[in-house]
Image 1 (cartoon, rainbow, N blue to C red):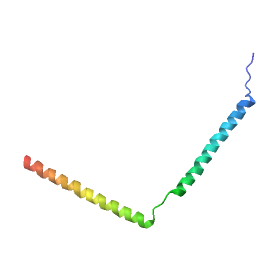
Image 2 (tube, rainbow, N blue to C red; image 1 turned 120 degrees about the vertical axis):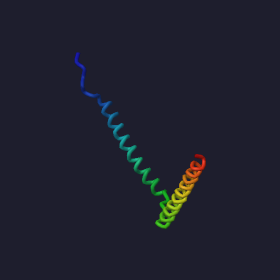
Image 3 (cartoon, one colour; image 1 turned 60 degrees about the vertical axis):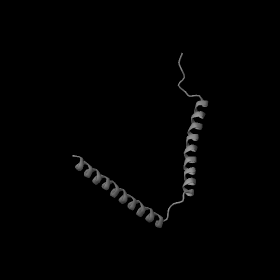
Image 4 (cartoon, helix red, strand yellow; image 1 turned 135 degrees about the vertical axis):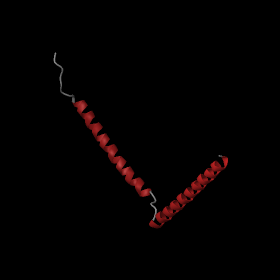
Length: 81
């Protein structure tokens, strides 16, 4: 007995439906993504500049803080030894 290599029409229909479903999922993702991106409140140029300056100032304050701790620890190590 030979096995038939031909695929049944049912299998072809199922594969086609699966392919369309995957395509539909991708389309739904893109549509949903566009919808969500429209809802995002993007910062203005002024806000970006304000946040950038605040971040730089905060970093400078942290650098000074950790350098003071470093100097204090070096002083304590010098006194103890």
